Amino acid sequence: MPLTKDQRILLFTNLARAMAVDRMMMRVIRAGRMVGFYHEGGVALAPGVAAGSFLRKDDAMWPHYRAHSLAHTISKGLDVKHYVAEHMGRETGCCKGRSSFHLSYPGDHVFGASGNIGANFPLCVGYGFAAKYKNAGQIVVNCSGDGSYGEGRAHEAMLMSSLWQLPVIFWCENNGIAQHSTLASLFPGDRISALAAGYKIPSIVVDGQDLFACGEAALQAIEHVRGGKGPMFVELLTLRSQEHNVGGLNNDGPTPRDQALMDQWKTEKDPLRLAEVVLLKDKVLTQKDVERIKQEAEREADAMEAFSDASPKAMPSVESLMSAVYAA
Ligand SMILES: Cc1ncc(C[n+]2csc(CCOP(=O)(O)OP(=O)(O)O)c2C)c(N)n1
Image 1 (cartoon, protein in one colour):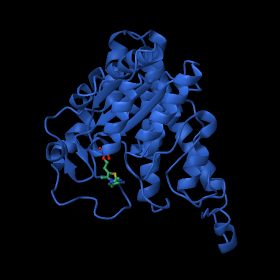
Image 2 (cartoon, rainbow, N blue to C red; image 1 turned 135 degrees about the horizontal axis):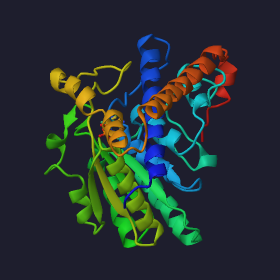
Image 3 (cartoon, rainbow, N blue to C red; image 1 turned 90 degrees about the vertical axis):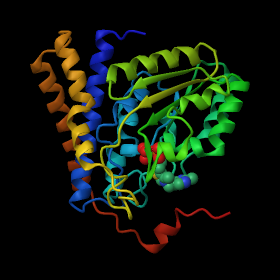
Image 4 (tube, rainbow, N blue to C red; image 1 turned 30 degrees about the vertical axis):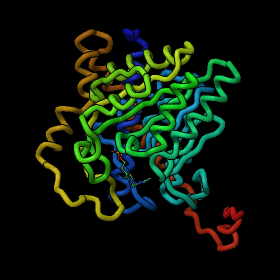
């Protein structure tokens, strides 16, 4: 499904914004100013941007946690400054600086990037069932990495979505590695979408470094599921050009990765640079437009950081901590 000029500019702008925020988050954590840890998005943010950019406000999304879902949420139009402040342990954070990165924006139909990978799958089936029952054209986007597909829940979700023809997009951001485990050590074959075929779910495989291919795949999948044709699987082949996270323990894993190759990806596989070349060649944007978009993206990220810096640090009393604990 070819993209219009405006759709290409929207994707490019959202990717510039997502990458600027990701860089800001890395700067903050490397400076020791973030509470907890951060999973860098790096060159893997085009899929998240495409997942969010063309949804209706009432479409539901469970974003993938990489880059703490910032590419997905920014692209869906959410204001994430309170979420950024949460990372920096501020009272203005969405949980008053008492939590971590497991977001939920019920009003925007965006639900948690759970700490328990694969937890989103059954929830998406339930939401998809409700959406079909209500018959209001709402769809569900279930984002994850490749790692989740080793979970039984993912398979039950594909089975039930297919059987009941639910409006669910299985959006698999396959970067070839799950924490310390390579794809080859976890799955037979190198395509996760091959698993969907067993449940008779149609699939598309795209280059996740090609922003516009990701966008076209998103539009195709949205049209399919909104049109009542049941679920669709989209596999976006991308790259993890850095360690699993920063600030956590045991990041490198037992097998060192090829640093030279990862450094090469950071330049040659940068999706923003690749998209820029296409837009300039097709005369969709001028170099001046490109620079303006990038500068605005940097300013937006800086403003989020400044908002957090200007907010009081969370110093919760024990009583106030207990007020947020639920025990059955
Ligand atoms: C059920 C469960 N098992 C293991 C973990 C530990 N864990 C956290 S992230 C991760 C890797 C996830 O890989 P993937 O889904 O491919 O995403 P990526 O980090 O590659 O973007 C693992 C194994 C977890 N959080 N939950």
